[in-house]
Image (cartoon, helix red, strand yellow):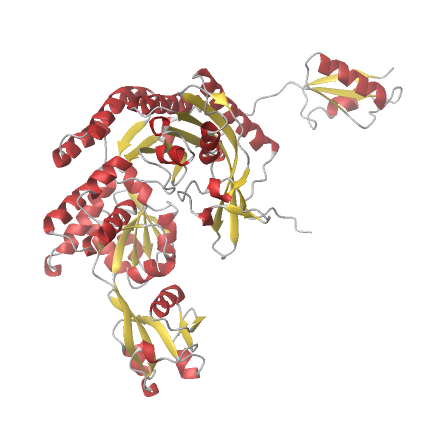
Length: 217
Length: 392
């Protein structure tokens, strides 16, 4: 049986739609009354695991799920050994350095050395600042990262930005992007190498619909 | 006092040890049948030897605090190859050796501390043959060894194979950094990384075709001939698979050739393979191996005899795989020597010795029993089937 790890939250609806177009119907997970975390597809040949965004690559890397859908930001942060198969195009956002609008900083390199930077994405942030040769103290937060500069705990933050509204409403401004992110179809490398076509057919169906103009999907 | 073992270290109960012993014994019997001699390489080695000339990353090795740079072996091939090229250098080739023992792998845990993975391995090494005949013997032995494990249909055993020469063919048009980037994308099965590389459309399409190319070996070889034309490696593999396919099929093992498959350790310079079974939820690698001529050369073998290949079974993983549906525990015949108030423990121990001389498994009930009936009630608790009662 094929097992698919799906991230709860913003990516779920589009993920279900893409799998549905590839022949696996997991629409039961969208039912607001659903409390099950392991949901079979309507055809019975697959099942979906409903997990937190950051846990999708974990389930896939350990082989409990052969396929999964997760944001590129999570893949970059966790660096788990999963195969990246298709850029699904939805869930677009960017990981950016943001500072107080009144701070006067225009580039990340303008930040003072050894300043504090708050982020949920400390691995990505470390890579970025190391590449700039700028020593910073990273403070790991798990949410509401914008409060870092507002309260004065941190000079800057590294966080996901979709529309930029949360930053604006909190008096912050993005000054530099680390990378663009979107939802990716990932797979367990060994399961894919042992595959005799079943997984490949799903991957190809999802790739084909991603490459079509979205109005036709 | 800490009561837990260090993270990842094995701490087995008697039943697990018994099963490990049985699996190792069956494998060893098969290796002996095929003419392999047992060796016992050291658990502690110099880091330099363990790194196998850079093939094994130092962070994978559990290092010891000592004046010399020492570590615990993460696998046994490097040590056996060294022995084959030094102490056993004058033995005639082919040299067939096998070993079983514990290996230690170091890995960071999720909490950021160091975890030690301690595993029991059992494997063979075949030295001195550069031709495909060595692969033919080795994979036949792998299939014969797997047969003794009594895997069932639900385990869906699959032999996944690749070859470093196939990877070299794929990478031959590319140089330097681009070659490394393509290799990494193919080995990591990162299709999106391939899309991001600066390649012509033709090159990109060819690499996409190859990253998706895997399946029944003889069919895949045909596809590779269409792409690369005739090559020695393809002809050699053809001979190997023609011999192996009926043998594997008779044991219910599916063969899968994957030109972009390369294992974690960069030890291999030829055929590479993993025997994978379906565990309760995820695929489990129960054996792995390949050809490592480069390593044998680094150990000092002369060019014409610098050849070695081997495989090892992961005994603990096989035990876990088989214990998902454990067979009925075998009732081992054992005698309980119990004694009453009219005799002594010394007499009981003498009687036990007599039992042992007869080749019987016997243990003494250390506490005095009131009567024979009481001794009988203790049989089950002591895992014994017979009672020898002495009371005079």
